[in-house]
Amino acid sequence: MSFALASAILRSIGPVARSHELCARGVSKRELARAHRSGEILKIRQGVYAALGTSDELIHAAEHGGSPGCVTAGRLHGLWMLDDDDCPQLHVWLGHAAQRHGCSRPDCATGMRVHWDDGRAGLGALPPVRNVLVQIAMCMGEEPFFIAFESALRQNKLRHSDPEWLRRRLPETMRWMIPFARADADSGLESLIRLRMYRVGVTMRSQVRIDGVGEVDFVVGDRLIVEADGKENHDDDRSRPGPFISRRHKDLVRDANAAALGYETLRFDYALIVHDWPTVEAAILAKVAAGAHLRGSLRPVAG
Ligand SMILES: [Zn+2]
Ligand SMILES: [Zn+2]
Image (cartoon, rainbow, N blue to C red; front, side):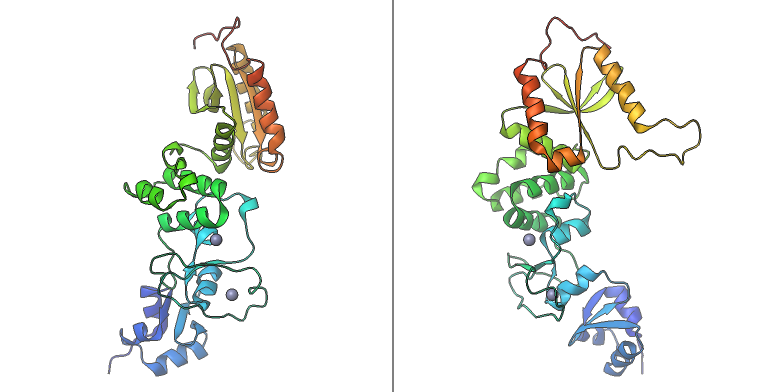
């Protein structure tokens, strides 16, 4: 009689599988019970098993009979999420055919968000990125959606037809963001700045190469540079060989070179952009109101 190890089969088809799927591949009921008893596999609920090392989000979603969804799945897909979008609780996708199971985690009942939108939620698998984006749009709103969408474009995680598929499923008020989104944002901070400034009537060119300066995040008008410094940008890397040059020093050199060419630079960090947006917006709007973005008597020197 053939004999298949439950842990090996789970690793090959899993990481989460139902007992009938394992049995169909030669795992006997006795072997399932033995593997569970000996700690080689995890039992999620009656008839559902997981391989050791399966992420807690996948296990928790499977306890409820679905897969991670929305921001939980977005994070697992590697899409950008601002910390403030974080919800400590699980966002789970049950799809159209699933029924919701309970779990025994004490902190779950109050905060779990359930998504029932169309599609088949597979145990142990993430929904396709395009489904995750619709879930984020409906659950978290415009900005988290836009950031995640630009991130998916940047990381090539969407098929050619997906933007149109998305556009048809978004609320009408959010559809304009599909053609507005770009695939070259370097971070969620950049997506957020461009979106918020567009809303107040300021158009920004992204990823602009300036001879003598390098590539800057944004240019407003002719000569106002706006840079978004991510969390990591000012973590000085002292592990590299050679003389130590701080990130801040490099930024100062860059800003000085830009100034010599007739540009002005506004530089904002994560804390300002995410936690003190009014200050950022006021600074950019004041410069624009004063005409600092327009080429005046101070002409940029061609590089
Ligand atoms: Zn959600
Ligand atoms: Zn739960």
